[in-house]
Length: 486
Image 1 (cartoon, helix red, strand yellow):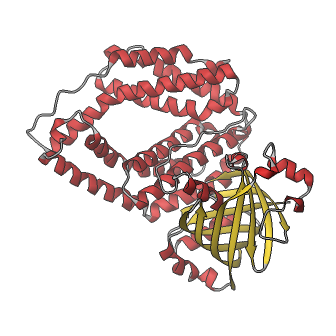
Image 2 (image 1 turned 90 degrees about the vertical axis):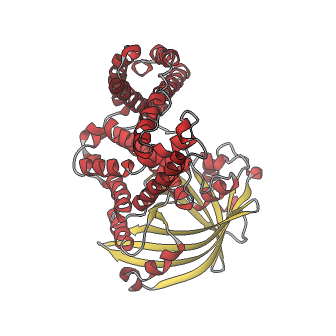
Image 3 (image 1 turned 60 degrees about the horizontal axis):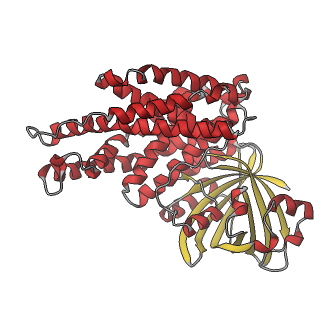
């Protein structure tokens, strides 16, 4: 058994030639061969849910069976336990592994239930590169993944650390990235196959559930949360690059806002070198999505007759929306954005913040303090919900949104049945309150857009915040708050 440490990127087919021509790769000997892999699991994905990947790969006249289990991953960096054994046929042979290992990998899954669910065929080109005293294998895979009669192409670049320090992976990635755009890879080939089967590949994606353990340190909890946010962003960035999908744009924006909230939530543990610069760059990047999202909301809504189908104002709004999407796409495709995400990944893995005493503190104490602090702040304004002016109402909405993100991030720390139920009801109430407060915010946005696109025309009267619904949601939140102190 060994640990596999690799940095994975998605690349466009057009980038293959520039990558191959990168001086550090052009100076190394390249080896190329065709490979085919079968990935095994139960129909309900028991291995996948437990973080295990089980495959047999046929390449160069050999059949190699490999099992991998995640030990941790963040921002494209995968750290996994790995076991290998050569097998006689291109098929699963669990007898090639020690019985104890098989029991450990399979858990409660039955051997007979394992079936080949995903197949990949690809051409692999590899280079051995020395950089900063470390040895790195660079692997370029070009091929297809298929599952249940569905098929999709992929092009991946993997940098696997063979000897040395992880920092060398990032240094090499930056060098190759100057020749061709590299985007952090968030899916293994196996995961691509499952996403293909389930119709999720290249589609808008909501955030995965954050899985925290009560015994975690603040550092591990923060990295887990940040990885979830980055994964959500990258999955939606892929969808945006394929089509200008309003849901993908919304979820990409949500992912960046959640990531910024995580930086604030854990600021005492992570503040230091690079923290403020990364925060400012994330603020810039998230800001690129706001205008396009506002236009999408106005085009989708039925509360503004001024922007109804067939009207001149709607035609102007469509044109503005396309221009806003142009700016979003330019930001996504910019070197500034790609550099930001790579540097954020480096900071998450190797930043000096990880070695601060605070980073090793148990996360439960932080959760109790921050949730109580944020709830008190929101509760003060929420208690005056019926008499707030527009600015105070807007600030309450922001406070509720930040509190909701924090509660969602930290919900896994409250694993007891009663605690978990209260946490779920609390988040649900905050979500409802945020939605009610958003109605007036959307109208203020519509007024500003109407004044610019249709001066002199009258917008329908602003709808009042549904006070009764908002106050009911606030009472629900109040009734379930405080579970973090128990």
